[in-house]
Image (tube, rainbow, N blue to C red):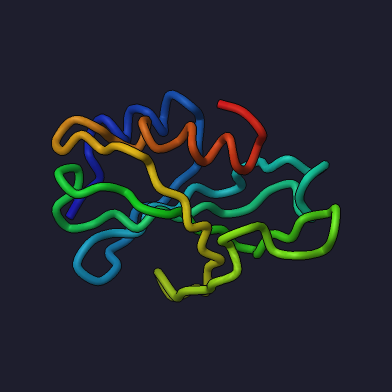
Length: 125
């Protein structure tokens, strides 16, 4: 399995350093050193993981994962729906249970999912 050309172009255009690794039936896309809102979270940068299903992009990206784990500065707690940890690509990742309300099979890509991630981790698109 390989990453879609559209996704590679998007990642390159944004200047992200990334790896795409086989992981089970699909792949693990890891964006390295992704910036987060240091006013909200206890880290300034994290590695960001997306589990890419075998049937992607007919199948959707669902959830995203971070390492190291993030806690809210306001109370030291994990964010809402982000207190579960899973192993992917030989690492333990904090899962952010976040979902697009609509995924257009065969059309939508990582670029359509990223605003959800940006809103959560950086406070805007």
